[in-house]
Image (cartoon, rainbow, N blue to C red):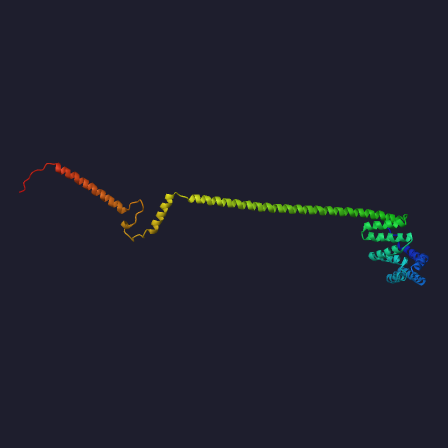
Length: 298
């Protein structure tokens, strides 16, 4: 990036601006109600500030430039030279303000050209390339033949394009990252949903399985009614059965449809008695039919 002047040429410009505008500033100041004394005082202060700046007395130069601007606001040399002093100290914010002030006050094209050219330089330092392009264009409108301004304009356009490409690439990367994050979030959500569905299906399967096992258990416990009744009677009999030795066997309560030992014994004895009676009858018949010997009973 080229400047409108180097440091060695600054002295000439400062003197030129200080003395070259005497006629114009007097006329302009007179039109704006500024008296001739104030105009000459502002010019003298500007001249003193230029000498202090050449002597590296920035503080003294800054004070005198400000006084000169105060005495004659139409003085263009004081704000422009003060802007150059700020620019060389890399105080770009203060420099821009003074260049802008000089450009707004200037009526001649050469002065406007220098002011806007240096405003473009400040924009370049701040990497505000779009604004730098506009400032250099304004400078060329006031001096189309300045090659330094034309060079700086081409450089600003190139830097602007590079900046826009980088911003576009960064935006694309951000978009890709956002898409990847969204895809990952959607994938995680799908996995969570699938896991919940699997758990739900597993729970339903376990519930159905438990239900089936419960039904099978009920079926396994089912028995014919007579078995249930027999088991109930048997259980009841066991509950009512006295302890061993408490009662004689004959007093034990028989089961339904089942004879006790005593009853069986009684039946056997009855059968034996019947059989005995039958034998006696048969014997009696045999005796009756047999011949009897008469014996004397003496």
